[in-house]
Image (cartoon, rainbow, N blue to C red; front, side):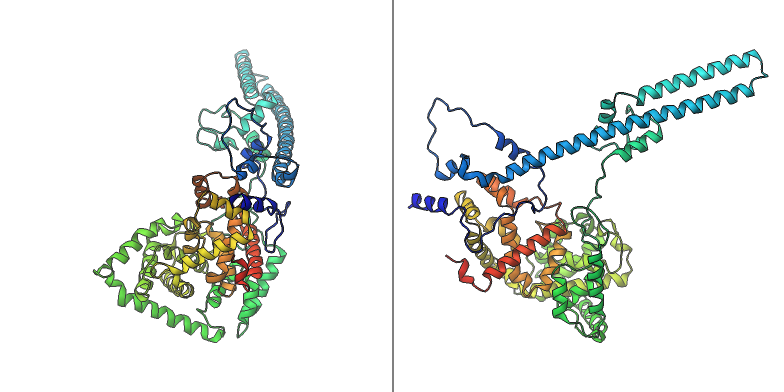
Length: 558
């Protein structure tokens, strides 16, 4: 039976069954980086080892298939060819850039020497005029000064006017602290560049290739993609106008708002849009202010009624667990601020007291952060990771806290079975994820079965924390834009996002050859550079899966 299964897998390996995912080369997200895939390139170019004297032990058909490269496997080598092409292209670009830098540097040094020589001649003429009527001793002193100036100029020339290769290498050489010295002011003490002129240092700084700024934890208006370009495009400005027009009406059309929000919400209108889509605010504009005041007063009434009981015998374990979990959250720069910690403790404790069926469960604490950060942006312009929350006015902090509590409560109302006893909601969703992946990518599913990787071992956290531990905060907020706009987004659509997310790493998964390697990969997926583009592609693929399987649940059951 095993041999028959292997044959079946072999002949259907490239079959295009309904719902199967096909690679689209030239549109990889993120773009292929040959430096990150150097091992793959080397492995692809390695010659087959010589046959040893001792006979090898028998291998399975899957192992034989993985180490065999012939005409039937041409399609599987596309990634390696792309990697080799990308590598060659990068080398050419680097060499061309290096030659330009060397040439520019040499020209700059030549101009600098000419300028200094002109200044020296002018100085000599002025000095000669001043001391023309002086004594012979003064003339001797002048000659000594000229000799010292020439010696100093010689030292400058020796320090800067070296061979082009040395000049280029000295610019890009990392020092002990791991930084790239770009200008004279950044060079460590004792550096051979200490004697260089300020003008040459500025030129070196301009000669280096431009590097995009660090992507913030929470992106700005454009949700700053991996290119690091923060400017608002014409399309984004047009979308912002549509949001403002829709929100300015006396009664907001929630269906239209969901359609607009599916592709992302501009930062300026995200707070009020999230409140509307979550059901916290009414669609009628006249009633919003009164509802906000009533709900905020109600929340602080709960605090007066329940929060003092956190040290009681019945509740001290709950409060202690909350107190332990908050410092483990991210971003550290935000949650470790004493004022933020205090707010999170109150939100989580009050929710646990008011929901005794589940109480507090680890993972719920992560769900506060996106709401809190988004509602902080109602009051600040700068990035949240560099902002001291305690500098906000007390009224603003109270509003942010109450709004975060109620919106988190609305979210958890739809997925509370994830956090009741034995967490049956998560168990059910992980099982559905396994069945779905087995249909859309049988190779990935069988590979994990081969090395005895259970979906519950890695996907439990995906369901429990809604992928917040797998993605940067900026990506989570963009993801939640769509979850808020999608019917049952957090409870239903999230399943298809997880399936698309797993298959997104198909290549890396199939390259791992043991249980440990697979678990390390699946628990530490390289998404820190992700931005708006990657999340948009992930959501589009998830929507495709939902369209194919949501209305036909038996389709992904064997």
